[in-house]
Length: 595
Image (tube, rainbow, N blue to C red; front, side):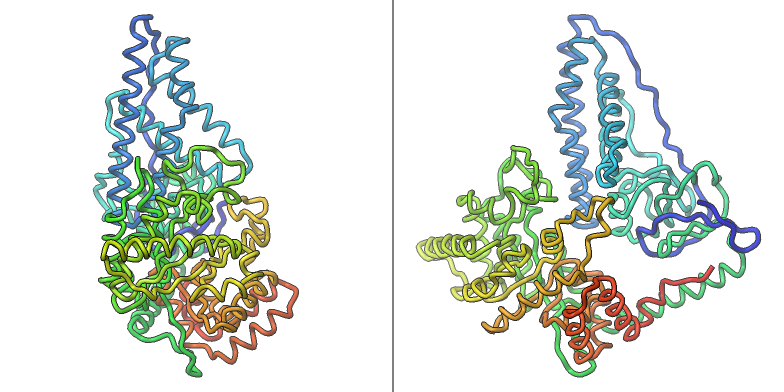
């Protein structure tokens, strides 16, 4: 809600979703909604109307694929994956069949029938208490607008593409398509009335590097185009008519940010060594082969997680061995001799599936995904294993299985791997005979039998996102229980420590590649627990190295020892935060301002 700060200025508070500060004129954008025409069809017009609907759906699909391709080229596979949700909405047969029924039985024109059905779906989703599902209304609204645009013969999404001056954009909501197609050179940042940290628009804002605040109530009613404002994406504030004192405060913040960025640039080419000489390896997580440049610029010492799902999404058939080999080899050659850890296919759960999974599952996170899917698709899995093995001839490729729950799955995967090696020998195709094989520890059962797994692999990588979810039975996208998703829960720390102990008994290294690895306040705790490597998104790598180079391993070990005996997740988090802040105050002070 709005609040008064300094005299003459107003502060509107929302949810910060993308860091940064900008100031300038507001553009209060109200999307033009064309009236959907309505007429009754003659009986003989129904077949042609259904065909017109199908053409519009095909054209929309091609349009979405084109947008997705452009996003992948500019931002990366993770951001492009947002449009998988749009494609699934478009191809929802229940929705399409209901539209077809209205055309056939009610004799409604295609655009009006589609409009009615989509509005019913959106109203149902908007009424759901779950925040994540409510966010999907924006996806459906975007798809609906595209389909109607094709049916009505009008352009879609061009209003923000031709702005005349730099502005802070204010809207009720911004669909992913709105965000992608806006003129980035003219948008300083944006604020919306609805949204959350998990909304697709928030994800794209972070990728674009634009300050963004969402969830500002009644912004369209309280703001006007042309007003001067300051947008604070760090703290979730939109300050209308900022006073001289406020501008001074934010000038200081910007200077601290510039100082921090300079400090981070200094560590890019430096090793991650603690003040008392302990060496830590910091690697990067990537989505596709084109991400190698971001890895280089970040100062990462290789790739700790090469996700391969992007090769499989939105295709009629899985990629063949040769296509995969070229993608894996491209990364290996570009980063040689630094290591590249390729994770085998991890479809399912929160990743939208391709043609491989047609049956809807009640609990997809507990269902047919990752290694389970691959072991039941040996032909597809074999093609990927052979491609990775062939890329290993470059000398720096390692292979990692996801979602291992026990010894049997690991042994089955290794048996298939040995068969693939034999096939390559018969073909006379080179590969690294001693390629390192690793297992992801992201299911509590795997951590509990890590001693057995450690005798059959060369390294572990802890996927903390799933490990926390499975250990605590918490869906962090569910706003009603998201507060229970606690990375510093004593159970999680004990599972990590147990994994490290099992690995060290066999002389193995342990990496963390989940979100905990990219959180600076948790870096000391992870190192104290014995983790040898951290792998995070490339933009986070300099911050991780910055913290590591300012702490002492002795302090980190003392923190971990205390944490393993502590009963409170909040106390553990606070103690870890205090240590990180004390070691690297600029990293945290650079985003604070007092109003």
